[in-house]
Image (cartoon, rainbow, N blue to C red; front, top):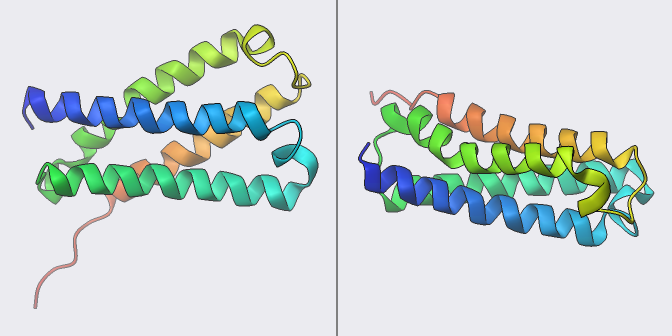
Length: 128
């Protein structure tokens, strides 16, 4: 994978993470955390969105399946670093949310990137 490919994956990952985090910040207190089923649904949708944009970026950059693990690392790194910063500064960045939302946000991020890692580790189907 070239440096240009890594840059595109990092940029795509940062944009998708930022969008998911802004969505969480805007709707967590009033909507997402009101019921467990709705929180679980939003976590699944966020994970699906990250996986979709990772897959889309891999297809657009024409990265072979065997190199998706490296691509997933480049895609996930900005989001994981950003999530760490958000979690460290959670009280000041998301002041309207209760303290237990910190763990929920962490779980939200962990589930999303676990799905991306699973997609990257999936072996391609063998042709007959």
